[in-house]
Amino acid sequence: MSAPATRMVAVAGIEEPTDEVRTLRLVSATGEPLSPFAPGSNIEVHCGERRNAYSLIGDPRDTSHYAISVLRVAGGAGGSRFLHDDVRRGDLLTISPPKSAFAPPAAARHHLLIAAGIGVTPFLSYARAFARTGASYELHYVHRARQDPHAGLLGLPMQAVRRYVGRESLAASLPEVLDGARMGTHLSVCGPPAMIDETLTLARDRGWPAHRLHSERFVGVDAPPGEPFTARLARSGQTIDVPTGVSLLDAVLSAGIDLPHLCRQGVCGECKVGVLGGTPLHHDLHLSASQRAAGDAVMACVSRCDGDGLELDL
Amino acid sequence: MTAAATATAREPVGTSRLHTSEPRWPTEQPALDETARHQLVVAGPSTAAQASASAWITAAQAAGTTCAVVPADPGALTAALHLATTGTRVAVAGDEVTIARAFAASLAGGLVATEVRAHLTDPEGPRPVRCVHCKSITDTTEPVDGVCDCSQCQRPLLIFPHYSRYLGAYLGFRVDAEELPA
Image 1 (cartoon, chains in turn brown, cyan):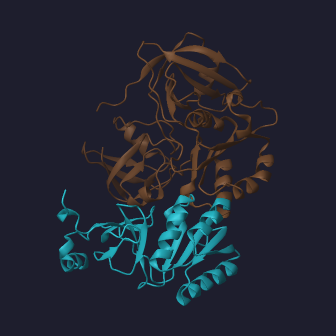
Image 2 (cartoon, one colour):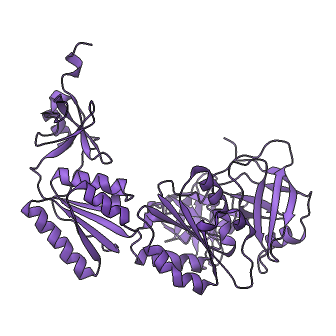
Image 3 (cartoon, chains in turn brown, green):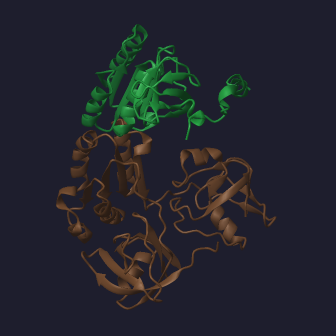
């Protein structure tokens, strides 16, 4: 199996439903059809030097085009600025194939979806999949007072969507929403990390077991500078030093080793490395508790070593 | 070692006990799930089962968790779960039949296995066997690997060491099926 290839798409349409959000319609530029995807999947869009991940907001079975919604992030690293300011209709973009990282839980009898701001994007493809399968769902969507709701909501059945203006408004209703969820409901939440944490904590406090809670966060962790350690690379035989304040990922890249990576925030899982020896000190949001306990993999972008050294499958 | 020894002891059936779906319900009372918001307690009629339920109810009250007692009748639990919300757990005490029915009703009602706690207070009590021929369930005190008559179609059923949590019964099939004329 070769690594999934990137592909060229053309920007077939641009909508700007609000000042901050730009929706791009992408079609195959090679004649080869696009692939269907799992609801909640994202694609990476190459924005100059960077690659940014965006949720696909269209119908997962519709292979005539992909659609993404891009929020302008003023303080970001430039990927969203590029897609807002530099991309025009007819331009070609390089994307990676869809990656499923936030699929709807199959066991759910009912889906309780809670989204803040641009975090609504994965749920737009959920809603289109649910319309096809008849799955039961409700979407609670909060946006800021001076921000228009996402235009993608307009295609959804109104009885399934409840809108809130301002976080306090959602917070006031959330206990009742959680307590009233019928047995068999799963909760999926997407938005800024603080909003996700508050929602999940509230759900746990109200008796929701962990296996009914699902979340996708786009803003990751700021890794602490940590203690220095040594990484032994089993395959290449190299030993590299990872000083305080330098990530394992950067140390590996500096040594000339190509390690795939994307978010650098412990979220996406792209830079996962097998651990053959030593004890990882996990800071990421990607691994599950049991995967962390197994100690056989580490996210190089944020995680470090609990001890003097790690032996890595590199 | 124990599993192998058991397999030898039950040689006539020739089944491996190393990998089995047979439930091993705890005979010591498990603690209630303290993360629950609401607790449904199901208990069989025996004194031991009722005592177990009382202990759970006391624990729920002490923890400030609301709690309801549901009769040991699968229809009653199904009805209760129809109205239940997420955050609810089920705790069931009794014989294997009581536990099997409450567990199956819980799964059908949208709970997952970790949201159900069981206490086998009457290990000598009956167990449920589902006839693969007529699909009805017979409660019997015959052991696994033993033979009982199906209460519906009267076929002699081998109680096979395979258990379905969703159906809430052991698998039973005609013990002399291979000797019958085609």
